[in-house]
Image (cartoon, rainbow, N blue to C red; front, top):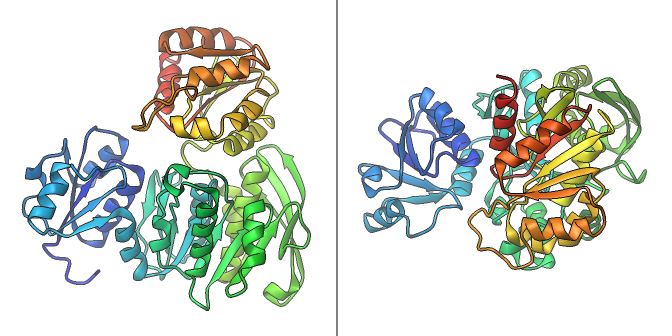
Length: 463
């Protein structure tokens, strides 16, 4: 696919999406003529335009005249005028996942999957390989702070890519090494049942070639089931809880902004039993696990330990993963992507390393997720001393009775009274300004539009 690129023009429908923008930019760097369309202007589009990529705001059939191929994201409906025109005129239509798969065919690839932590783990692996001089290609689901974008074009033989399980498309990505961080109840709007979700991850592991390896977290109950079940592929396990794992993590401690930990490595893995100390520039056991998965990949690729240690110490994270965005009065402000109870719990654990007075502004994401995990949301959010819940970000879903942000707030209020439901942004800011007078850790949390609300609050009060 990489050969004969002259005059091959590819159009991306929904190019402003995080996944689409990364692939579009990567293909531009490879030499393709790339353009795209989206409904709204955003930071991803701004980045692409700076590289000379033509962007159309709005979807029209005129956008795909004289195009050789059209790439579409899972968010695009089939009544889209650009899709309709492409079908009528027999222009090849390729899903985002299939285009990523085409790119991965030309490299030795590492696919990173899991319900949570895959974006951070992908960035960690990419950073380590880059610093080790392996010149990797990276395609990630979040903005990597060290690159200020979510992708990297490299001339080395390795590619590391985030594998999105939300629509089953991760099963179409060719790879010889994989990481699975965890397997939680997510995306049941697509999978319909827990068993279908688990079966999909089983297929993901079995898609490995016979010489491939999968790095799997032994602490996850659902993954533990798969580890015991699958006998035909090489699985390397890592754990904080279970010393029977191939790599057992202990001696975890926090000093300043670093988390220190030790890896106890089974002698069968690298022909010698080892105990190696590391430190990562991140908080929380979830980041220790993410770091451990990236270390295992790096060791398999022959990266020197001293180089791995340096990369972890200098790691500066992914945008919207507990990102510090400013200080107002006596309080520090963070922006975080957590939108699932497991992720919220991990973020709260990190926040407690910074301060005891934690304030959360939470925007629920999807009515279906809130309905399915209502009890889990109540359990984790009721432990927050001061909680604001704002209107649900629907992500295109229709409202479900009993599963709105207001319903969630009402249920939590039965357990603890320090929860406030607000739909008025101005009113929210008035509450928060008072809260910041006392030394606090304020976290804006969610996967929708809340990041804009967070930055607007910080910018407004730092003018």
